[in-house]
Image (tube, rainbow, N blue to C red; front, side, top):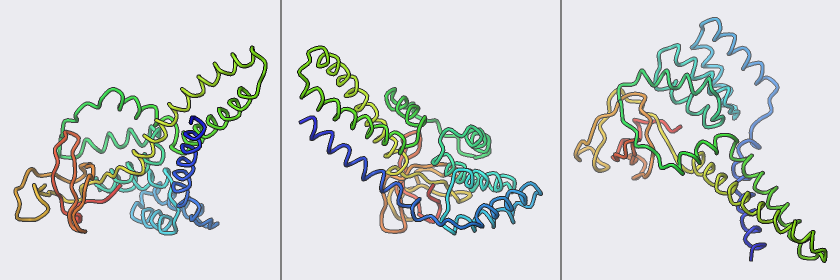
Length: 263
């Protein structure tokens, strides 16, 4: 029963890692991308922010994505006082590298410029701890760790099963128990990181002022107004025009899809 469970878990993790890596496998390996990146950085240092953004977008259009590229785009837009785009690209950067202190600090700084001041509901203790721990490593790293621990468990279980030595069986049983706890912990963190980074969707408001509706149509009641740069969580959609959002204070409503950009 345990062996079958571990086999299924390992299979699911392989599928998740494979789907996560599909985009990176499709990324081009053009020799001039690095030259373009360096040129864009030089243009930024020369205060030619519009031109640096053009080159950064050319790199993105080629299919290459990285935390550093998004971070530099965030900096460029910030220099142009484009709050919404700077927040968007800092968020994109942190999605790929959640421990980047520069991106974290810059995002905090630029968030001070947005109008909406929404009080966040405190996260449950378990949820907050999972978020902190899952940010230590990437989703792929946690998944690989779970797979390696599962493989060690299977090997040790086979040795335990066929061993005739009492001392070895006692010691291996203890290690099996420890491995089982570690596997369960890393699996929980892996699935949490996967859901946070690849299942849950967030967006940035790109309208100077937009109305949040009670229903997905213009004639419905206006619940509140949101402004440029506010981050929202997408929880539902209605056709291609309307999406349902949730704020950090728990309030929900509908917004026109053209008013936001997905992180």
